[in-house]
Length: 148
Image (cartoon, rainbow, N blue to C red):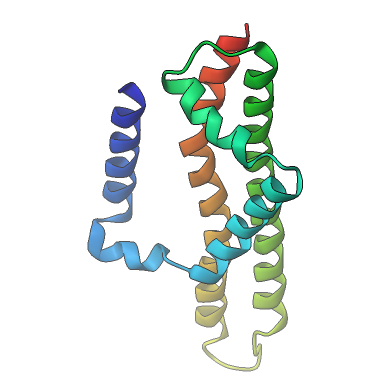
């Protein structure tokens, strides 16, 4: 219940910070989102942690009668997704920065404007991992609380 309230207020807070739903389109970049989310899914797939990740939400919000190893596995899978999102978000940010600087036509009079627009897209690749962590951090701490 409290997690739903947390998610509602986080989303409202973000929409207020963005400036409303009409400006939310500026934060939608499917390529960057895929570059961050697909490696998280692949990491869960390759480590066979999909079930543990799904159980993390069940353990954090209700199902309590499991052994400690299941809690540890679920907490580890949530942490793995958060770290993977950060790593690939940072890689995507660096790729965006390098491309923005490299492909800017410095002889053009409006090169600074194009550079700023490219950099604003590059910074989005830091926004998505932070958003993923905002969603998963309470789940991780609820699991850690059950472990201690």
